[in-house]
Length: 424
Image 1 (cartoon, one colour):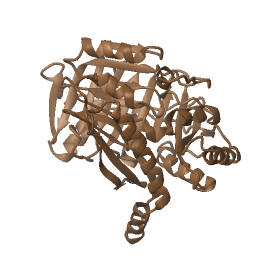
Image 2 (cartoon, rainbow, N blue to C red):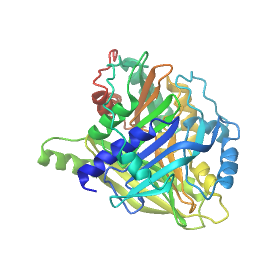
Image 3 (tube, rainbow, N blue to C red):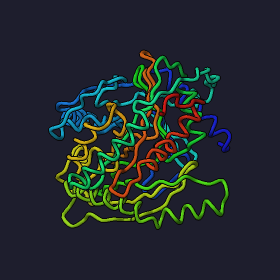
């Protein structure tokens, strides 16, 4: 296939998959690192599935994995699963109604690597079926009225309160998030995802449909992957807005790399991730593969570090995910106290936001992103939501943190052709 043919095929594949109650798509958008396996994955129609809320969700997933370990398994983990890992709760209203955990074995599965489609599950003529599928015109989406769950004044106050907790020694760092939402939102999820992926192509882009619930993700962050005997986690901490002028953009990139505040935020989470991985690791194998790497995306430069370990053979792959969940970059350090303060200070339930989306493969490997920079949508309730946040340390400036939230929301707002109607 030519590049144009391949691009058209990918669009058709997702539109074709979207006719089923359950489907997902993962698109690396050409970002390939040494841990990546595939350029594009499309999975559709659940042959079998697990859909559960917290309690013993990880145990249920382990049983499901054991029964289906010779198959590909796709799904997501909600941030609210923290409540079965620690003595925590989520008291805010669940506006979106995503389950805490959902995984499925697909009836149809197609992978693309090195521009070559490969059928894993489904009929031998699946490529022809998709190729002949009549590509649908994007359905018009109404411009949603985006509201802020928290006023700017309240946001600034809460940042100062969190800095007081840091000064008292409760925590070193906390990831504080805010929700933007729209009621009575009428959008075409496929069309919105397609536009988002054009405006903000990222290495862990994903589309996930579970009946009337959708995740439309432009995530740049890997939570955890297993490759052979090794685990890799790649926390992001450190963000800088790009410039359209190359010389200025390079200076911004250099300044980010050498910014002591951003480095401090990053290394705190690297240490937390290292601690999380020790629960899975052969003794003495936890290693920082890269510290303070700078990676460039359309709207931002990001500081990304890579932490690895050799997986202890006695640790089940589901437990490997469980022991590291939720991603340290979305909690803070120490992890438990940070999550307690998140529940106390944030105005919205996170739910699936800051959870993980990904797959297990038949070889026992897996790859999960962090659900950030993502539009979450319930088409029955017509409720649309996206959350953004950042790492708060004692050195944080509340105004600057608020502006960083708006920067992280910029691609989503542009995708929705919307503005926030109540930020004051």
